[in-house]
Length: 524
Image (cartoon, rainbow, N blue to C red):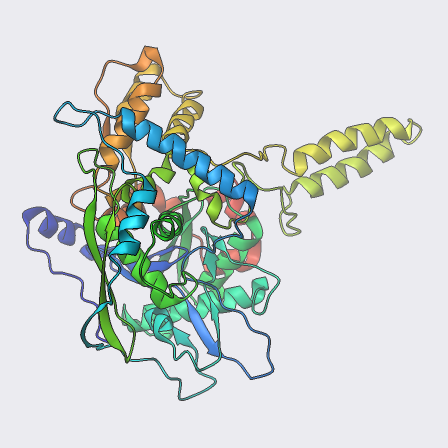
């Protein structure tokens, strides 16, 4: 596989940036996503990206497990179908009320009309040429297949496929290879491969490098403990620290919603299974080519998709689409549409506290030692009173901040974040937050995204903060929105404030999670 190249700096800003970061080349920033791993030195203009997956041959009688490239869909029940169709009706009603730049109302094309046209004009796909792709065949059964090669595994070979992250968290599950130990082993294999093959750094030399790991805002403490141990002990980095970022849905949800809408409109590519890696890549490309949030694009469009399967003929399918292309990404603002996809849980708060025996400030430890002290001091008091006190502490220790909720629309999530921050900020700072909004991630590249989010926020912003123009940014200094989080972590690592956050292996071995409570740049 050819080595992906990081472009050389040419513009004046790029040259200045390269010079500024040149002395920080020993810091590696790791941003693990559900699909892709983004990794690179802070001196790189952008990170390398590779599929964060690993596959292993399994014996004929072994249990099968195949994680999918896209988040899995769910079984569509009558209730779920009704919920999704109601969501589509709500979106279509809104689209009909939208005003285009020419002053007219936006038209709407019934999906039944598109489906009828696609069925009546269905033709045989056009054969283009023999595919240049080849299936990956494993010579050594003990050798794992890592990264982008997982997409093109020989179908007749029996592989177990693992994506160790799902929705920003470690993908722990009850199936084969789903234990926390197994998942961490997979992460180590993938990260080692990326460091050695993409960054060209031998694992034995990581002792002179530092690592910055991007983690979710809502995190699992046990998982962070294992990931920190992976960086400092198993991989042998000289030091590390963690920074945060997360949202509960993303590009895979849009792709799955788009596929549901495509099937409703008589999508001609059959068979097409989102669980198949090649089909998942085709659907993702189709989404990136045609999905938009541009109100001026309406009516019936002639589109095409090229199906390129290894060692087969490339075939081009032509068909028609209309509002499917705008309804799918509007799931970001009407998340009931994403009920079609599987998620661990629909929560908006920190999970219940996981007891850490190494942490003397662990709430379970404080509760138990507090009980013993109370018993010794008040041995003659009524036990019921003691249990009442203990019960209150239980609620606090187990995470009373845990909130179960439906998924928030993106505009609602932005406003909620600002409202919560406003409790400790001045009015002037809050006003600036409402008018300067940065959105990161690949979905922010959808045409018309910034304008749509800007308008939605403008309608809901509190009256006292209205008046100033709202700016929604998706690109910072020409950085791709998919890489913004990685770049932000790289910049943060170079700040003077980061000097106090680094954790060294000796400190970790001595203090374990206690040091995360002191050094982590977030509430532990």
